[in-house]
Figure (cartoon, rainbow, N blue to C red):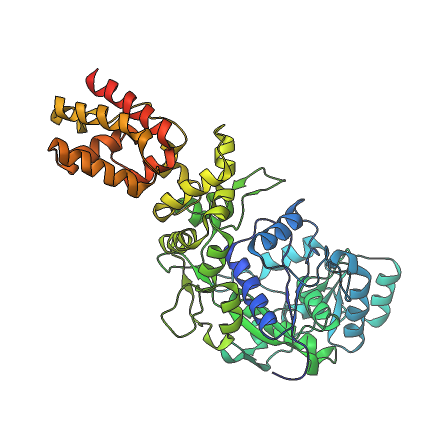
Length: 510
């Protein structure tokens, strides 16, 4: 690392939900910044107003908050390089676009939409189905290469709509050193003359990202590998604007792939295969289309982050569970893989299970409380925490605490009678009647005390423990499930345990 302070940025467009690939980009930026005592910047790239979706920016902020990936600078937080929304920076981009025109590295293009469509139709061939506006095509179009200076000035004076395009060299090799991929070389012949400034005065991503990275002193630019084809445009803009020495170090991160490895994971794949690909629930304000998220399904943010960190990175050991502090300490770009990482939903659930199992009962109970509220169940916080502790090792999601422990909050309404009645007899009936009567005399209503007392009475009556425990479980829960039966009874307490034995006996003898 050189002496410059590390500054990284995540620059999403507010056009929809936040894909887990986007969150992973945030995470790698965040870990790198924190490790180097640097700054993590959130910048909103809203230059394409036609694609802007109301609520998307607030959603991005909420996702980052939930994940614990809070930016040091952003539109909400502010910072020394504000504003952090590109739409609010609109006036400053034009001067750089004009500077490029003056130096001959960009040009005015006055082509109308009809002319562009006609060109694409005219030049279309089976080998080239969508012709691009490049160094060959520009010679046949209406721009400052083909028009005289006087004609260009006249069009400008008349306020004729125009865009500013980069003048891509015809055949130049450009090489960058990518932190993930090593040396990558591009030839400009494959790149068209991208629009830098649109007719409405808004910059395109290509111009805005370079200008903003320069002005915000960004030292490292991490983004998905789908941006690699745009890299030649950005490299040349850094060079043409005279900022080559300030160009950030690039890192193009591997794609997150479908479970079968065939192509990039999309929202459609998630819908088809029944798992989320967005961090949080998202409803598109324009289309009303709803997409489910990891948060609402019951993923813990720590598990979600840990799972994402392992998609395309490892620390070289077998370790899979990392706290945020451990990730910050151990993360390194040289261990980010070049190849895409297959998304495995079962593995994602495994991470969540690990974190639920490790989480303290009180915190987990607080996360489970909304489920109880929804069901109209009132219970003391320490009781809910005890229940949570008994069932959490079976749970992959927070809401499954109910599935595995509902009987702690409500008496059984139905029983697995077939598991009890065929082997029931008068001795067992007498045992439970006698034992229930003894319960209030126990010195302590603990699982150990209950089990010892139960065992002693069973021995006295000459009945095997195994023949009594299953009926007892069914009386308490209604079925053959739940944590250790004496733990259940100890948690329910004397009165409730006796009431359930009584109700169970009535069911069996009924």
